[in-house]
Image (cartoon, rainbow, N blue to C red):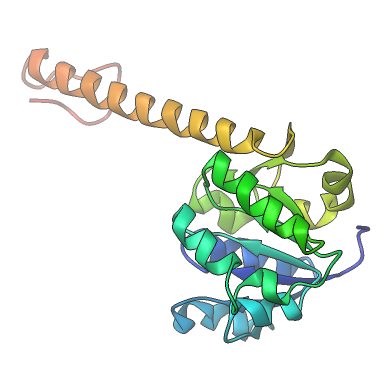
Length: 214
């Protein structure tokens, strides 16, 4: 896929998805969106996106469909069934999943997609909502390398850097690792601050922090 504008669908307009879809609009792509909560699409529609009533309709309007959903069950519900993305996306199209999904579930759904001629890339993101809003979120891509190369431009529209992790399923593992490291750091910093507060003298400044403890 070249740098030309393409027809892109986006399903799942939560805290991350709405910003990723907005980045695709800013890059000049034609974007069709849907969500369980239509009001979530308001800023995108105002910026030129098109609304679809179902995930199937998003697929019918698109060459590439992105999803960003809160659970493996939600991804399955959106992709499968008579109103799912795979019922509408034509053979030769591509599904790119920005969700934090289970590796085995990603492989299962990719097999279903392949059966109807649809390619799959997993592309979970990391960096937080503020990075997504700025188009600077890190994108971790797994899948066939040729398919990744074909979609570099549309992936670059949603984030930077875009990193190829390896075969399908690789990004799911790396994303879990990044989440583990983030939570470990969060807990350790919290424990360290609590220890500092309990052991520091009243009024003592810890490591030059502007807020006094005690």
